[in-house]
Image (cartoon, rainbow, N blue to C red; front, side, top):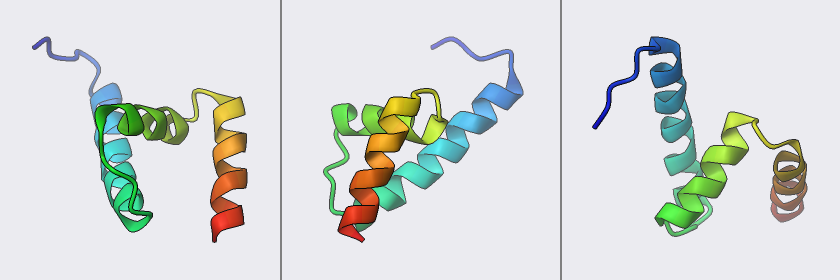
Amino acid sequence: MPKTNNPTSYDRTVDIVRSAIPRMSELKIPITPSNYAVWYEYLSDSNEALRLEMDALLSRDA
């Protein structure tokens, strides 16, 4: 597996996994690769449309 030369990128991915797994578990969302991919993208703030939709869904279920 290739190593990243960018420690910031590595640290960011670690932060995302540390946020995603507990939140998914709290919401009883199965931690499958597909579900994790959605949460990774959501928490990385790389997709504004996804972020807005997830925020709306999560606030509705709160």
